[in-house]
Image 1 (cartoon, helix red, strand yellow):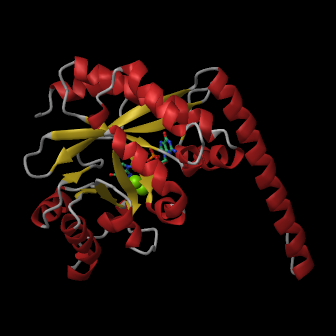
Image 2: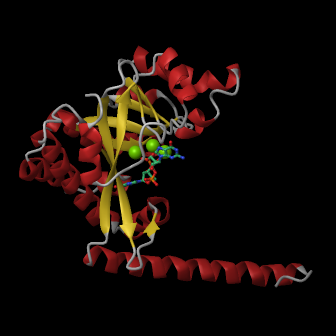
Length: 279
Ligand code: C2E
Ligand code: MG
Ligand code: MG
Ligand code: MG
């Protein structure tokens, strides 16, 4: 306990850091075991076209179920997977699983539903990425045009130069690219012109408060206009209320995703959900 002196606080602080480091390496070790034991799986969250309420696509979201049945959320383990390089292997598995799932959706008759796949910069930077993507597409029989890679805005702009060629190659395959968490990256917009992206996903932090007042809808409104002006479609993340959906629709936003429509679900549940959804 830090009683009073700054020295005490210093001791307390370093003990905290040591605990943090120990916790991280414990988590990393547990993640290794989890991968071996196939404890990772994907959930899928629907994306809805605001104009007609039809299902436009789904986003694949990674989950980790521990041996005692708890779920560990990606925010806790993706960063350590990225830091340790393990994300390359995990990301490859996600890419393959999601492509196979898209092919399965097509076979079930949902052959216009896009599959969003989150991709980390460590993955994209890897020299084998394009080969991995190609093989996932081939092996699964996925419809290339229905696969959409999501890259975060901060990453898109930090790495814009080195990643331009990779992104162009991805586009050439016919795979779509979305900029995830748009608006949080504080970035120069120049990269939007340079990179061939198809879609902007407005970060949910801007959606959460957008119905409070005129000023709070400013960012979503301007992102929608910017996207459309550049010929991109725009999706709002984290839509939780009918009021948000109605306002986004009024502002001309193309698609929406969030708990208001559906939570992320496992594959079997998604299939049942799609059967009863307008498409
Ligand atoms: P993201 O790509 O922005 O994904 C959207 C996150 O928002 C998901 O969290 C989703 O469950 C959550 N969400 C959806 N609708 C709502 C809503 O209405 N309200 C609220 N409060 N949240 C909502 P999740 O699944 O915990 O994933 C967090 C982040 O982890 C993702 O953010 C993505 O950056 C990363 N991630 C998830 N799966 C993968 C993966 O397979 N690979 C990589 N590299 N990153 C992943
Ligand atoms: Mg995403
Ligand atoms: Mg996002
Ligand atoms: Mg987000």
